[in-house]
Amino acid sequence: MAAAIRVADAEGLAAVSVRRLAIELDARPMSIYSYARIESKEELFDLMVDEVCAEMLVPDLPDPWRPALRAVATRTRAALLAHPWWVELIGRNVLLGPHGTRYQEQLLAAVRTLDADPKTKQAVGVTVETYVVGQITFALDEQGSAETEHRSTTRSRQAVSQYQRDLIATGEFPQLSSVGPPEPSSAADRDRYFNLGLDWLLAGIGASLEPDAGPHRAD
Amino acid sequence: MAAAIRVADAEGLAAVSVRRLAIELDARPMSIYSYARIESKEELFDLMVDEVCAEMLVPDLPDPWRPALRAVATRTRAALLAHPWWVELIGRNVLLGPHGTRYQEQLLAAVRTLDADPKTKQAVGVTVETYVVGQITFALDEQGSAETEHRSTTRSRQAVSQYQRDLIATGEFPQLSSVGPPEPSSAADRDRYFNLGLDWLLAGIGASLEPDAGPHRAD
DNA sequence: ACCTGAACACCGTTCAAGT
DNA sequence: ACCTGAACACCGTTCAAGT
Image (cartoon, rainbow over all chains, first blue to last red; front, side, top):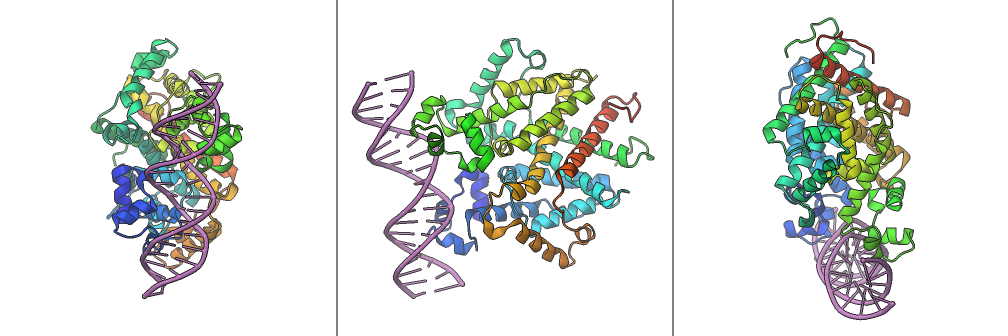
């Protein structure tokens, strides 16, 4: 498990194979199944997903929903940046284990103080989680190829942005040519825009569910 | 290409293999590479992603940013529900082709009328896209195993929700036990909650970038 | 330039045999 | 109950040979 996560973090999900883990653990391929109490590789992935869910739990969840959701979002994001393959796995249909369930519980606890019906509160939680996962997906596109180069050298990031520059030069893309192609942003920038979008989302939720309170209440 | 997408739609991404496509196209495995003008399977995936991007283009994009973003979000969602594997592929780092670039252009065009600096406008577009992708990720978790059963029969959805019910029965999950585990929602419900979250997001964006306008302006 | 078939180095998993 | 090794049915891709 820990070995599988280590390999996935370092070399990508594709590097995680039964035979590879066997080498990592000084065992024979087939003993992995009994060692990890796994019946298929799919179950190994389930375990990996659940393990990362544990990292998404915030130790002391604040009571008010805004800081609580912010804390959950931040911690979730940190965990996903550390384990980028989680997003890919969650794209398959994964079964959630104990930690995943605890994470769901945490999401509901975060919106507990909201004055709305349970279904709506659940929707708030899911929407925020959703935002984080989506944000990560695109953050990885920018960071991924820059830092850990899993991609074949034949089509480097550089070649692609050249390709895109050529496309833009055709004049078919007025909006893009005025902004330029999305340049690789710094980690600080990505943090900033993540929080900006999160602000929008929380503001929208607040405005919709707490219309009485002032629109720009501080957290 | 079309064959690859057909297979992925019908049987999941895992079923897309060079040898399988060869059978599908009545060809020999190695001719796929010359036929699709591909140098690796990774490039095939790039093409598939780009093809779906074409489906995300809105024919007549409205001028005002709210309906424009709503149109983009809706169409993107429809395309992703039809091609669930897109989310998984985008989790790897994919290179965007002409249609992907056109999609980026569309996103910028949608926020064109917003009164903000270019970076912020771009952030708005990315945030909305991000929300859609994230939403799909979890929608698939619910729909996926129910409709197209790619998962081994040994761990059916039913067994899992039983497992989760047991967890909840331990009393460790007060929030979850009051709501019950997330029951499989209907397609209509999913549409509703997707739009609800989108409303929140657009409201938040509006409140932040157009504070002068009334808070509940209709689209 | 495009297609072919055989081969290589990998997969996950089955199975029969061991302890 | 756990581990083993050989085998099976698959992968993506290389390569040398054909047209």
